Length: 229
Image (cartoon, rainbow, N blue to C red; front, side, top):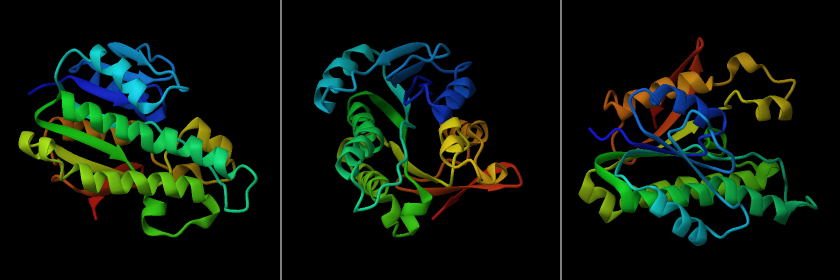
């Protein structure tokens, strides 16, 4: 099995935890704005560049076939329709949540090997609920959900037997989320290390959901469980 792994956002909370789980058995390519010293190779993006320019820069640096791609980059915003920061926030959310996933999918079409794995990160709350109070975040994450449904039917991926899975986390326990929601009950949030345990099993073809699955991630007594919905 090809163990080379690409993590989009490998310097963030979930990406860093996943890197630490996989680095003993995998060569880790990290695409992010800042390096992760635990990754085998860091590929840094210019945030002012278009996605097509980023792709042209990144693709030659991924010089080996990949067994798995994880799109863990993302951000969160509470902006409603009447917010003065609406359009700035939308640009930011689309860039962090959607464009990063689209970049990963495009790389996957070029570099994923037979029976590979492509995992995108959606959001459980906006998947199930209308959320006008977080309009720009909801728009960007629902674009990720729709992209997943398109990618899992992509001819190149299906020809290679790639499993495309979209995880739907509830709140992930990260420094950024704690700062944004200081009064929340952190014990109910998802530990990035525990999410990574689950994702590591999928890399190893253990309990891997089928192509096209949306998987809700929940905290059950301190453990992260995944339920296909």
